[in-house]
Image (cartoon, rainbow, N blue to C red; front, side):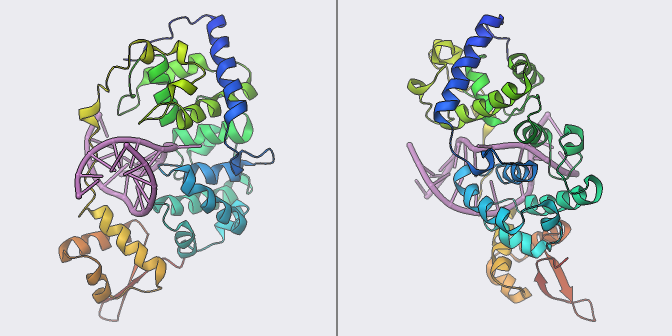
Length: 307
DNA sequence: TACACGTGGCA
DNA sequence: TTGCCAAGTGT
């Protein structure tokens, strides 16, 4: 259970703000989507790419993407096949299709400009609560709660004294974050990115660098001598080897390399024919691939969608 | 509310 | 080698 800060007085909040914002000024990474001349599209592309994918893998992909499709209209004009190939191995390729669909909606409904309003952002495909808040805050300086896995972990430790936050987000976490958000919009946006950066660089999941933390003396987890993760058993991840996800990835990887995949070639990709058929069908359902058929309706091959 | 959804690096 | 983790979203 998340609790309120020990001392919710303005003096304590101000101390935390100053410590973390100063730390951010001195230690923030020089990421291209944070440049002063950034814009809604640059931030949106970065946020979609960063969903479950580490910064080190996103940065070069983001550079190439922004060079090729510098505006939503540019991406809206691209084919799904082009977009999926450019997405390369960032993972979760449905994000690439959703980003393209979002770009098409931005062109059709918003005059080609990424909206600043959170509700309008939320209405776009692939944009949920986190991404809408992040774009509104980081691209447009809006005052809103940005609660990602980094911020949840920092607040969980600092305020609630737990090693890691609950597996699923709780309402109380949002309330805690809202209570700590600076009043002034520009400052609140910097606070959000500073908390994320602190979680990414210092207050990390595996081996937190408490010696480098600007608010270590305020940390309840540290004060409680680092109690273990109480949700560890509920956090077990799905096995990877032999899963549909692995098979889907193998099919997509083949189709990024070659234009067409014949059924016999697909069969060489995966040992279990029934599972392969299920996976091919699910990829078609997800519009990640399309099946080509002859005049008798027999599948002759698979391709990335050309439109 | 759980679960599905890619990929690669690290301990 | 195996499990965990990385700026989540959709169903």
